[in-house]
Image (tube, rainbow over all chains, first blue to last red; front, side):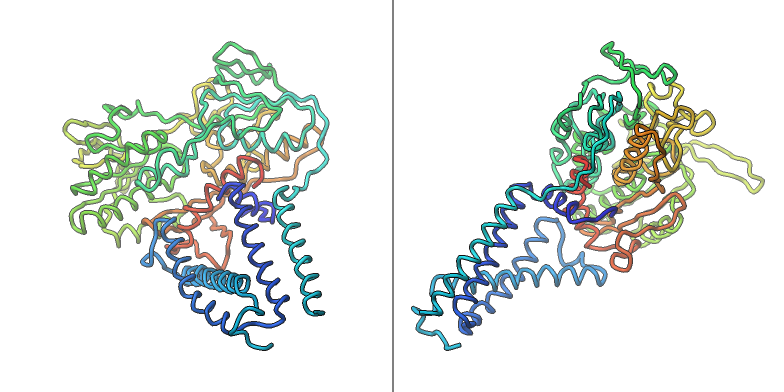
Length: 123
Length: 448
């Protein structure tokens, strides 16, 4: 690709999803990440029970992410060919897993803050 | 308490950060903009397709005061790289259709008329509506003409019925092609795939269509119910030898028979017979031409392709090359006309050895932009087009080879060491499916 700059990439993503949806998704990702950092800072510790539940969400997120990509691109497992395909697949799965974990952890922390959480462990 | 307070500060800080990013997101990232060149230049662009539209968007950013007029009689813009997907039932026709006017910037004039005559000596263009446009710079980007009349017995009205497809003819015909393909894949029989003897846009598309139909047919009716035959007038399956060899191997493994030296001349739709002229050479180099009749259940027609008549009649075409096709006599590197320096050619109509794809246009447009703006400033441009052409050569639903090459038939990979050009890969398919149209649209807006 010629002149692959951040501006070009943003332009391409805007076209891919539509300008509004792209920035809404980027904003949503930024907000969830910010809230995640916020609960970590607020709680001054990681709740390992919440982290465990979040980990349980990881395989679900990984599978959902892969199924989503296959569904929107008319492709499937049989199309995974070379090493770069496997890496792409793992990348999609990893992104889904991490995204699900962060989301689930953040939601738990917001809904059950440490003071009202009977299972809270001391940091 | 102390902890809570510090937590509160942290919360405000983080929320502020989040809101700040959201605000920045809403505004968008400002794009770098060089100082625009003041000019009164009259620039006429014939054709508001991929090349004309992308160039207009870029020139508006670079020039201040230029009068830019685009001529295009068709209100619809067609995303032609999507036609192969439409003809395989993977996308609806609407996937490839938008409105030309929606892509053009403010400050340019779009005349919904075709060029009727070009006088490169007097520097003027006459339109079909009778308007005369004098220009300081002319960019010729009208695309090409599909010469369906050259195939005896063939008519576009036949597409979609009696096993006839013709996906190049536009979104509607690509969708009708899928109707014919679908019937063929379900019932089985003999599939005949062709390509013309002339230069053509996206020389990978005839191969993609063959691969896709074979794949869908095998998945639908099962293996062994279809016989697939690929006919081409040329001696090789692709203009780039290393790619031709790879396609030859893939055709072999997929059971697609190849018949080189065969040029489609006539179709008898009622009997489902295609007539080819086969050219053979004996050891002494003497050519023999014979008619070959082939029965088909599905026939994909790609007619000869030529420059529009207005170009061929204007004296802008090569006099000694492609004389039956009339491509514009342009410098390979600058795309500037060799006899009329204020004329540039872009896209399909340019008489250069490669480059009739949207990806080529993406590489060509900044070159013409550079030389045109430089000419206005009274200096020489520096950008050069190296023949870059790219083709995500789909080999089945879900896989493609990301083939990129230049004038010298060298493979020029955008992702060296990551995406192998001659390997059938899912990631290359993902690019075609997800990223290509987005990149194309960004190009139309002059942003990529």
